[in-house]
Image: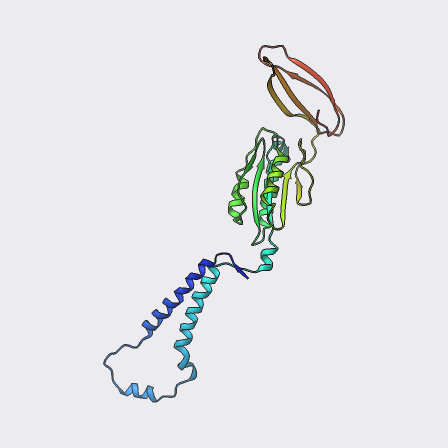
Length: 271
């Protein structure tokens, strides 16, 4: 057995103070009185309990103080400590998670799953919360404080960016790399532009139903090297439906005439 806060055992010293106060308060006081009742008590038969009553009550008081100090020190059995898990929950907060699913969005469903995982923690488990949109955001470090973890999940808000899931999962793995029994739980609709590498310690908790649509999942603009008056554009279009789609994309910058692109996107592919 180990102690999470051994310094708290110092409170056991308070048992000495309790014992001293007990002796002080139970010490007989001198006062004038009739002697006949005293002589009767002196010669009366004393039970075994009456001889040990004061010592037993003092011992009980000291035992209570020691048990309180032991509770503050938070004893932990080694088997329970070794079975504790170190979990990182990665919540996908990309723009596509704002898609409505019934009365809720996918993000709302993802947050409910994260809350359930927190409620299932054992006494010695540690957990951290990350969210992934255009950047990876550490909402908490590894902690066993369920109230803090619930608040961190509630603080995740919808965004209009793409989800950097590969970076988020890599960060989550590093966070628990040197911890016993590590686990990374990714809560997402599973529609990653950059799908994380598979691994035994990474689980996907999927939310939402497949959507029969096509959307822009990547968009970037930069000056053309050697000619700052011209721009280079990167556009990624993903097809989330079960059939190939012909897509017309129109790009317009400033007063320049629009550029129209027609492309065919296979199901489940990004072009």
